[in-house]
Length: 184
Image (cartoon, rainbow, N blue to C red; front, side, top):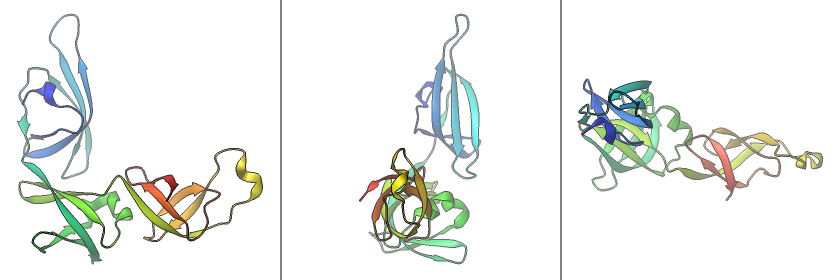
């Protein structure tokens, strides 16, 4: 593939490492050739890098595929997932799961990304519903502007929610940013 094919969401390989393009920018100067600037995340180390290539540069496509899995439980420093087709259990280290771990719920379906037949990351659905297990009560005077308060969800994650949310309410959370979306 050419460097101009590195659109947002594309996965490519450089020096044996898989990279996911987060941001893509095509720069054409008056004289000389065009350049491609990308912000890419290394799928093995989670490091985010700024890279620049000539538009005519050839890139190696990565051997990456996604597979559905069901989250079962945490065991020591690993998370255990099950392939719903073969019932095979997959152990993925806490380092690879990363920030996604705060939104894992037992029995929830996720996608596991494999690079050269090795799991490299776990992706949860974009929005998920959780029950609020603890939050301070809201006060009537706090309705003039968007005021948020801390809440603890049924999986132990802490998020900010509007003041009208009470204990026992179900809320929809954006798992990419950890922010409140709506009441469920």
